[in-house]
Image (cartoon, rainbow, N blue to C red; front, side, top):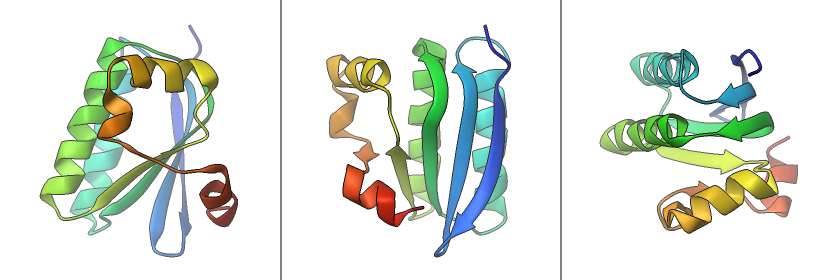
Length: 113
């Protein structure tokens, strides 16, 4: 299991959280929860999670993503996902979560860089 880290960058009023490592059971979901809640506390409600460097995702990671989406929606914000690997996209699709998460297209991802 690789160490999970989050770095933050701002682009056009959106905070992009670059996720690195596996978003799986352990401290990774708590790190994501803390970082998203910190953004919301600071008044940032438009957040993009960048999965370019995320290898694995399990049910605890998915649960935390749903929790983040709920928290952002409650604040009237927007949570987007980008750079999903085929495997992570497939996991979200079979769980029918591609219907609730906003996943950026390739073109939208280019504009977010």
